[in-house]
Length: 425
Ligand code: GLU
Image (cartoon, rainbow, N blue to C red):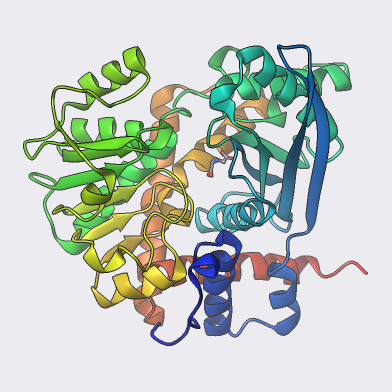
């Protein structure tokens, strides 16, 4: 890809929409994508911005801003999470919505892509404030969501409880219970077994496949995981149980290292009790930036965007990078990692386990018939193994890296559908 991406400023480098567009354009050029389809797919279909009031515990009214961006409905209803964070921007939600389109296409499930977000600081809000904010945000975007329109799910700082509130608010407006309007719900109200750990499970599966592809053993394979939220903690646990040695784990406040492997069961228990991994005795406190560039076979950025940039990519020592988060690597860093011949499993494949299990949840809700956990896990593993295979074969056949292969495969699938459906005008 050398020379393909123009020199950019750091601000441009870390803008997620720029990061998405750079990869899209490179892949579209390689595919010789028709100009009309190119224009269509480089722009989201719908961008909803809402400003709404919430009564805070103090009795005071605060205004919040929320987004829901729908990138494409070509292959089915829109699908994608909702995140709560002070850092949410329209450009970020746009990029995340497009990534959902590509992600669903890579794993070949019948959804388009969307994403939502509310600018807020959930750590400083009470449960009551979060509930009122969630319900009002839901009612502001209610015309645009629905089982056949757009199906939200959890993302950063949202969880099963958030989904239960959205489901309930939507259902109250409809006058009957509509479980399939969101996925990632609690089990007893239409959730799917296996959904909570699905993204982590998918990460483990693509790690297994990468090792097999590169002829490396699981035994003794050292793993560093950056981020210990839903994705990072479940990937760490499932990988340790599968024979990997988790030598480093980090979160925003700092990291932990142990060359003999960290006991992830104990660490999860510690975090449940203390709300942080800081102070855990079974490993040594180590700065997160140091862990990112430490010796290991697999590095898993599983927190947020822009963790691997032009500033640290040159120092990374891992042989394999598996992107548990969305957009953790900038387009400029891609080139540096490529020069170092680091094997990348791109986000739109590596973290697709979550939306794949969401697809199963949506299917189960609509069927009213719920699967055993073993069935969910088995189907999930098959889809991810097959998709990994599709991407690496595509990369070999077209002589591109895995990220561009995944984009090309996805764009090709979406473009094919648009051509088949034709343009309504
Ligand atoms: N937020 C998750 C993602 O980025 C899950 C989306 C979903 O399940 O719809 O893939």
